[in-house]
Structure formats: C-alpha cells, structure tokens
Length: 190
Image (cartoon, rainbow, N blue to C red; front, side, top):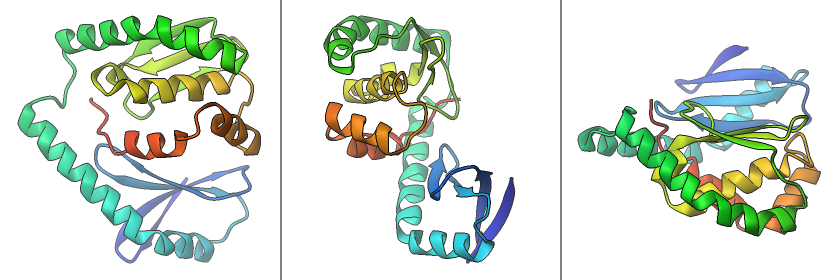
C-alpha cells in the first residue's frame, strides 16, 4: 500500500493482482483509494486520478454535505435503539427479497448475518455461502438492501467483480450500477 499526491489530493494506492484500475471514495471522510495492477506505474495512476477529478470532487463534496447533515441530525454513531430498528427493518424485508431473488439467481445463502460495518455494505464467503449485511441498510431505502443482497448472492456464482460478475448483475438487476453509485454517496455510521 502506498500514497501519491495528485494536484494536492492524497490518494491511497493499493496494489492488487488485477487487470484494471478502480477508484473509490470511502466514507465518511472521503478518502480516495485507487486499486491498481501491480505493474502499473505512478504516472499512469496520476493520469487516471486526474481524468476523474471532477467526479472525485463532486462525490467528496456530496459526502461532506451528507456528513454535516447527519451530524446536525445526531445520527453519526450507532446506539442500541438504532441497531434494533435497523435489524428489524432488514429482518422484515429479507424473506420477501430472498423469495424473489433465490429462484432468479439460482443460489441461496446458507446464513445471513447483520452487523455494523464501517467500510463495506456487505460481504460474502462463497465457500460457505455466508453473507454479511451492513446494519445501516435497514435505515435506508429498501432498494439499497436489495442491491447489496443481489450483489452478495451473485458472489455465490462469481468470486470477483470481473466480466462474469458484471454480466450476471446486469441480467439480474439492470440498474445495479446506478444503485451502487447512489448507495456509495451515503455515509457509513460509526
């Protein structure tokens, strides 16, 4: 892991055995992270970030606005009542979502766990069929819970986020990319 500064912007660089570069902005502080193939040079990474600077700035500004609004509303930290409410919402929605998506996807999770996560909306262990969902999804529009559930269930077929994964996601949920963009503008509660 390393760091480069691009026109005054700190960018964390994570080297991975991947073919393409990916950029994400991590809530709540808007940290910019680039996942890059191991052999890509710093000049290519800098150019990649510069080419996306307008998008980065717009999303970081939206994230900051949302953080200020959340702070003013007093909802930046979890408490027992918020956890119970979020879990109840997810648990109420899951049976219908699973009944809808299991026949379409053709796989079923063996177990679903809810937990407060600070850097992910969900995760999947394909080998065991276990899916973990971020509790915060219970405090949001249900279309985000549906997107994350479908995303994680797709990992029961496809381990990474490559062409096969994207093809399946587009077949299952054609607007998945827009849902992902909208979801990633939300602040993750601490």
